[in-house]
Length: 171
Image (cartoon, rainbow, N blue to C red):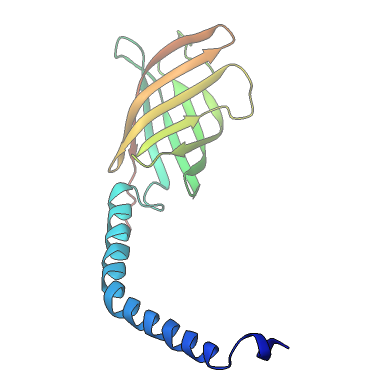
């Protein structure tokens, strides 16, 4: 029944047209497609300067109060990174007796993320709905620098700056 509606040569003509169009596209557009693909890959690598594994490791941590005086010291270890999400552990001690720095004294686990522009945000108390200490900073090689804030139910209770320097292990 179909053979009566469509002449047999029609299929042959369309097959030749499709093959010709494919040949033309391959010859004309394939080099341009390769150039665009490699340019896109190059630019996407350039926009994310923090390699996934390069942020992992142990860091020496110092938090400063609003006057610039060291308030908290300790260690921070980033143990995993999955895409932009990071996890790790921390152990900090106060350098004075004021203790007005929130729950960033003691030890615990943290969770956070790294943006494409190397901005890191860490919540030192990820399981808490209130009374959290947040670190927000920039990764610059082995150094993470930024601001910390102690947020409670009434809002920002205290704040300051911090530096975390990656420890390079000698073999």
